[in-house]
Length: 222
Image (cartoon, rainbow, N blue to C red; front, top):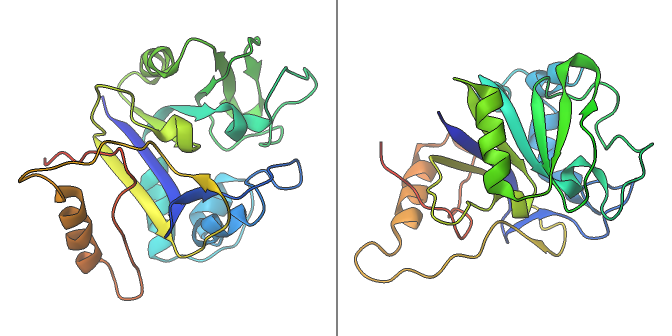
């Protein structure tokens, strides 16, 4: 079974803007990180709207969401923090775009929340390892996707990311640091992630740019 994580990240290592609120779920300026996806036909179809561009970004969105049987996300990505307001059902509306079980990491217990379209939010209070175990059981032979935010996207200790595919954006929206801070490597394997990222960048179409992966991710050759 494959566990994946795709996340948009600014050049200087941010995945959201500051001052998250109901009006700004991604923080001030955070939505700019996702402009590349929101404009696509694939993203809009998944969110129940029409139109959008059919281009390489649209193909990337399709590939990212193909064959996913369960998601894991952090509490802020579901909506808000602190004690629960039981009337609050998150940022995603009545028909969230996931359509599979979603496991939300939180410190506050809550009963599962069933939404329209097949999405059920399960609230996990005993850590990401438990969420991974539950998500894998629910996904069966399909993939488990770690949707974000930054803390949830950190690779659990002792594990290797099978696929770490950050979508780097040129924006610098705020103060929230992305992903986990891993130890600096030394020796002959130091910089291997940077070399792989540079190789990936050379293979991208003109106008697209990839930088080094976030700290904490390790690459595995297939």
